[in-house]
Image 1 (spheres, rainbow, N blue to C red):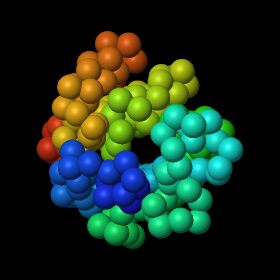
Image 2: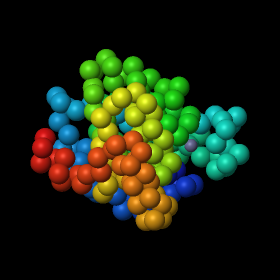
Image 3: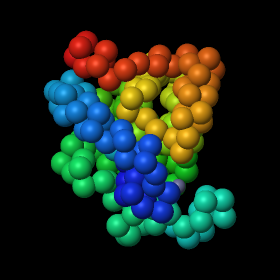
Image 4: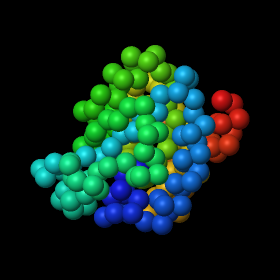
Length: 168
Ligand SMILES: [Zn+2]
């Protein structure tokens, strides 16, 4: 949830629409039990995605910063240069250091970064939940098909934020 994906270069109303629910969800997550890792797209000019999407989330630019609504909510911030938040990042090490066995995925974009991160989590044997009211895609159809894919292929449990908060 960085500026470029919500209100910036690749922003859209579906991404903006999940901000209130996702903010509530993050605020409900107790810091004692839950590590809130904000993975930030942060690109350099020679990254492969540049030819595909054009420049976005460029390092040191405002577009790569977490949206202002979420300031102060992260326990960790990890930069990434590819869709999958595990690929060439410190995410796996960070999860291991905290003995974490389950990842709960939120944010954008459901059919790109969330889905590729779910794949990364599946390959590493994590239990996966995806919070349906806290993820968004450019279209509702793309989001629904990505949720179905993650459920079928990676065994992800697709949940509502309320269900998760009740168990906390
Ligand atoms: Zn990117």
